[in-house]
Image (cartoon, rainbow, N blue to C red; front, top):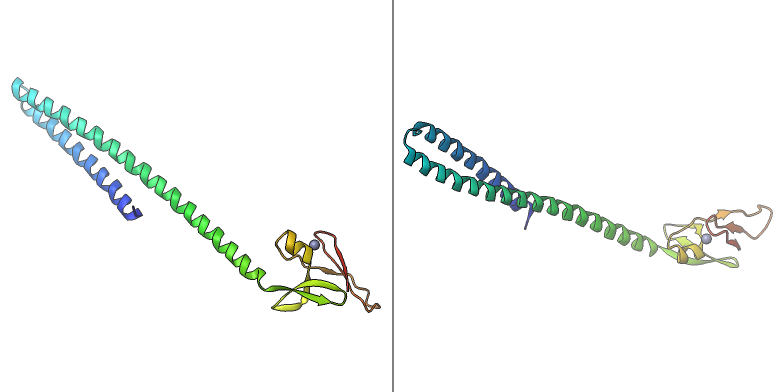
Length: 158
Ligand SMILES: [Zn+2]
C-alpha cells in the first residue's frame, strides 16, 4: 500500500468520525424537541445507541489507520537507510577497484590509479579493507625509501 492511500485512509476515517459527531448532535437536538413524546424519545435514544456504536468502530478503524501510517513511515525510513548503506558499500567497492599493488624498489605497496605517487599500506588494505596512507620516513641522503604505516606500524623499505 502506498503512502498516499494510507493518508487517504486516515483522512477518510477522520471525516467519518466528524460526520458522526454531527449526527449525535442532531439526535440531541431532535430529542430536545420531542421530550414530551416518550415513544419518539425512546426511538431516538435507541438510534443514538446505534450511532455511538458506529462511532466506536470508526474510532477503532481510525486508530488502526494511524498505526498503519506510523508503521509505513518507519518502514520507509528503514528502507532509505538500507539503500544508503548499499550505495556507500558499492561506492567503497568501486573505489577499492582503483587501488593496485605496485613494486616500489624492494617493497610492494598499494597505489591509487588517480595518484600513483602516494603509497598505501598493503597489509591494512587486506585486513582493514581501507586504504591507510603510508608516512614517508625516508632519509633524503639515502637511495632507499622508508615508509611507515600509522595504523599497523608496518615498515616498508624500498
Ligand atoms: Zn598498515
